[in-house]
Length: 260
Image 1 (cartoon, rainbow, N blue to C red):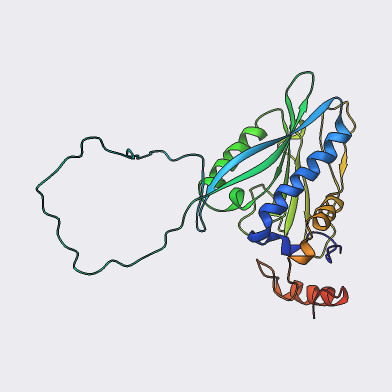
Image 2 (image 1 turned 45 degrees about the vertical axis):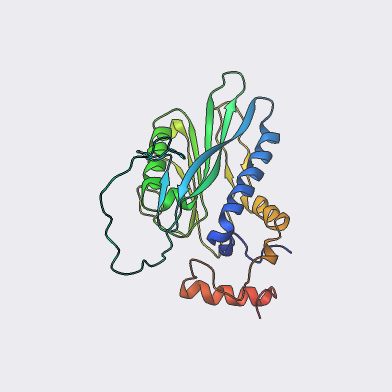
């Protein structure tokens, strides 16, 4: 069963689905480009590791690690008395870190072994306030200051969009930054009710640029992952619709027989 939405399906933004969506979509995009660009280029899937909790996102390893041996050969005895607790302790639950592996793509010139284009599919780790966003923005600036093209795909409505001038507002956006055109870049801005626009992948000036039909790739992912069996369209998505989009979506989902 195909996705009922003409463009981005907002129900895929749910955090319970997004990690799977991210992995499948970045892989589908990489596989598609690999066929189009060989033999001059290879498309490599690179991995970033994030350590996350429900309320915060950190990147990398801790600055300080405190460890203790599992066994002690010569335990030290002491005569210091230990005070009895005034009351029985309560059992509490702590937010535990979770390791998230997130892929991005690099298009590499086979002969020169240099990265020509970096492709990022934005995730919550890149957008939420905290170390994750700070680290990604630093990486973004490094790419923008280099001779590498950048394609940035943001299919998440939550959190503040990554910065650029002009103040254009939209639900979703695809940014194509050509190294030889900076600081100008091409922005494909679209909303829930819109089709996902096709966009080019910049390469070296003498090469033909492939055009990406992201909606077609996303439809393939939706079908292969059986997301229609995992989504309850009778519920509101996360984040919720705006008032205008809620009316439009309700009519659409009823027409598609996805909502009772």
